[in-house]
Length: 103
Image (tube, rainbow, N blue to C red; front, side):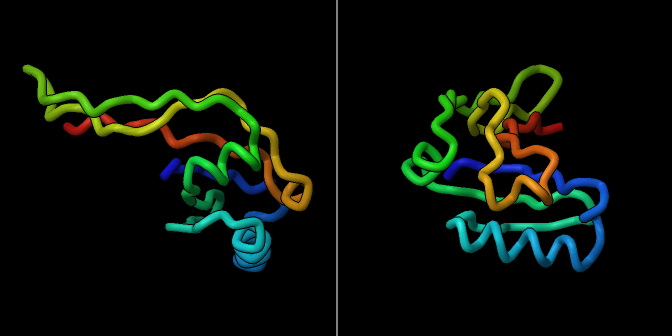
């Protein structure tokens, strides 16, 4: 699964705005995993992601612990993603959530 971060447009950063974007994103096949006041976390399988965004994704392998950390999670990275037309009015950006460093 490819993890996504959806940044809502400033005027949609309300409970009603989040709910509206949740419904639209779900109708597009985006699986929502968490939400806040300004962002929604989501995920998609690789095939659906490729069809929707038509953008290359690079898979990053997990890294084992190092001297100063507990390693890096695996995940994906990508450049800027186009915002699907139904979300354009409500969303400022959609990005692939980058892997995290375990501390």
